[in-house]
Image 1 (cartoon, rainbow, N blue to C red):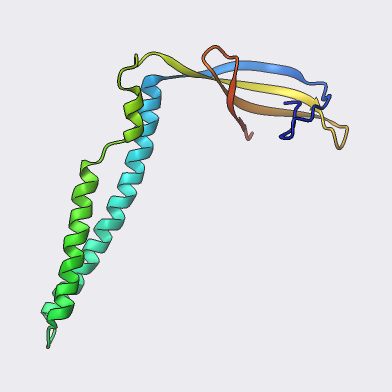
Image 2: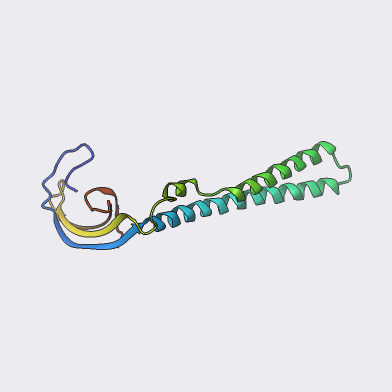
Amino acid sequence: MQTDSKGTKYHLNFKADKLEEINRISVADSIQIISDEFNADKDKKRTQFQQSLSRNQENLDKEKNSRHPGKTMMDFYQKNIDHYSHLIDSLEQTVPAKAAQYEKRDRNAILAVVVRCTYTIDEPLTNKRTTETFDFVLSPDVTRCYSRKRVKE
C-alpha cells in the first residue's frame, strides 16, 4: 500500500485499524465461480441465438404466406434457421474448460484467503489522514497478494 505502480515508496504512516478474514476460497468455490460465470454467458448467448432463430422463423412464415413467396428469401431464412439451430445445439454441448484445471485437486483445498482491512494513511498529496477499507485476495499462506478491491460503504 505504500508503493505506487512505478515502485516508488511513500511514507504513509500506515496503520491497520481492523483486519478480518472474510472468506476462504476453495477449489470447490472456484469451480462454482467458473461454472456460474460460464452458465451466465451461455444463457445470454442462448437467448440471443433463440431470438435470431425466432425472428428468422417468423420471416420465413411471412414469406411463405405472402402473395408472391420468393424462393431466394425462403432459402435465406431457412439457412439462418439451420445456422442458429446448430449454434444452439452446439452451445448446449459446451462445458467450462477452465474448470478442467481443478479436476484432480482436492475440492476442499484452499486456493486463496480474502481479508478485509480497514486502515488509515497519510495522503501523500494532501497530507491529510484518511481511512480506507479494502478486500485483499491473498495466497493460502497469506504471503502474496493476488488482488485488492476497495469496499464501498
